[in-house]
Length: 95
Length: 416
Image (cartoon, rainbow over all chains, first blue to last red; front, side, top):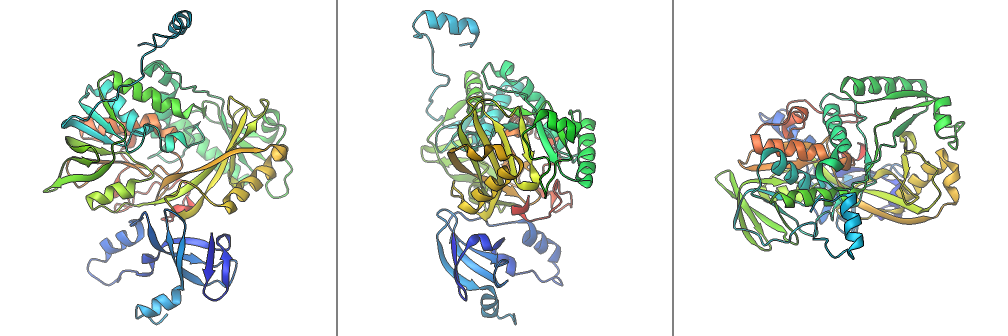
């Protein structure tokens, strides 16, 4: 697989470390009343879709940036690559 | 028909005209006591033990493709019970004991061969860890022997004992471990279940689960609606897809594991050798091919194929520990989709939906577990209670803080 890094261009997926579903960026609110339940679901349950999936890849052998890669789990086709920091800011976070 | 040496002789002398099909191809009935989704090794074993041990024969096994078309036909055929943790080891040892009597039990040649499995260690701390594991295995009734490097050298003189990074300091040997013929396991269970009245319905994909008021009453399939008192999901690799029909999210990610077979060579590797530090394990099939593999690719996928970086990693591991295989040529390689669970251990459990049961999360260790998985799942379906050796393999174990994490790497499936 080749991941088209927004800053560095096409890079071999072997340079990256895979974390998992991009939903892991949305950490639950630890002070909420249902925090215990929410953290169980956040930490242990996965949507695990067959088809298009947004996921987190870390460019360990490169610029050490986190990317959000949209990839099809049935074909391995990659359709979009974004900087995770841009995605976080678009969600209204500071970084 | 009972298979025996006499039968082979008799059929041979009469032109082999008397053989009958090993199982029927029945049409689905409108209702069953139990429907098992997935005619893989575990599903067929469950049907077999339901019929044989619990007398429940009004059972259907529905299968999207042909029976045995999933991971039971895509593994590297290793059987072993060299686990450590209390929630795991008694279960895998039950499986080992069932393997030892399997062929006599279901009257089918599954080519179970107890040729031994050797885990290599490379440092004093690792040997200590192996000693502890070996003791845990023996406490659970399994066999284990701790070997020093001379004993390993006697068994496998061709290993690279003075490897600069991973010198071989010894190993943990389970002599009762070994290999079995993967397809024959599925076929044997299928034949045994069919003989006892179980309907194995192939080319029948489940497209929906009938759930009303929290009760599962049957399945919708490509061949119509089938009712059942109990529906048992047994589709490792596709667990998340099937359970999403019930609106459930699982503590599972799907990953691909690749495996490789070389051209046929003269007998050289006596048993199974694992080089965990280098992501490599190997055995030699009865046809002479070197059967080997390594780690999962590490990203979510449902494609039954992997990528080249992992191929390179596995082959580098092989070359590092066993340089003699460098000139053998690769014949075949393939990938299978694994249910990688959050702690590396499986699930055999009820769900919150009455009448809906779940078996999955086998990671890359489903094959060796086949007999015990069927045995314990059948026990759960028949009695409503988990079997004593599988009472830790529950879906809510993360909520209760009772993870069974052999590797101790936490909730990161691609590290297990």
